[in-house]
Length: 288
Image (cartoon, rainbow, N blue to C red):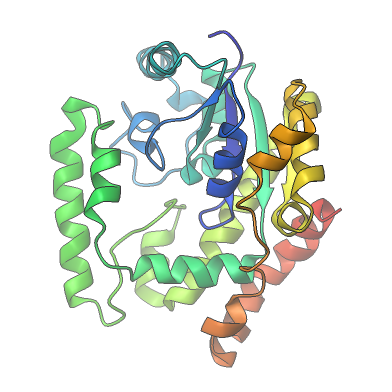
């Protein structure tokens, strides 16, 4: 590849989409024309029942396939910098590092209460065919039967679920299946955020700090021009003030504190028990 890939790391509903789109609005940066490529990341490991991958899962055939997919996209898109964002990658940092040892990582963390509230809505959302079709085009052909069956089971589960939720959504953390049987959905959403954040943070600390940039979502949306300037400095690219301002013209603070509208006091109490330790140990360290 011309340049090491830029991998955006963050739990689902953490603002990683707007960060990716902002970066890719600057000339030279390109990303896949679908929301995520977990189908590509999981090729060769689809039998694993969680998204927690290790360096050992990056076997030679797996590395060859994934590197080939990135190189193919780089050629077709004529990208100078390939940007990739898949939320399940929060649980795959050692795996990704084994495939792309020179990759640059941008870690975005958002208030776990807002994340869990937003994630709960996605767990119970209606079917979006257009969204699914964009992703299906990047499913490896040999994996289509597996994902077709998985999709069918997911929809059947929603029909019969008392919470009208999917069987699975977002990064699958170790133990999530068991938690879904005993915990409320808001608690699972909280654990999903906490596990992704904790795993990603600890794994990224093991990587050369010059290849890792950590960001706080609330700081980013509150001061997007300055924060995007820091991102460009981290990547090592000079961008004009006009380009930077244009890249963040859709960034807004309107989603901050949204959990207050959607979470009941009882659910918030349950959620706080899960997210508060991580908010203290990690979130507030990256806040400034």
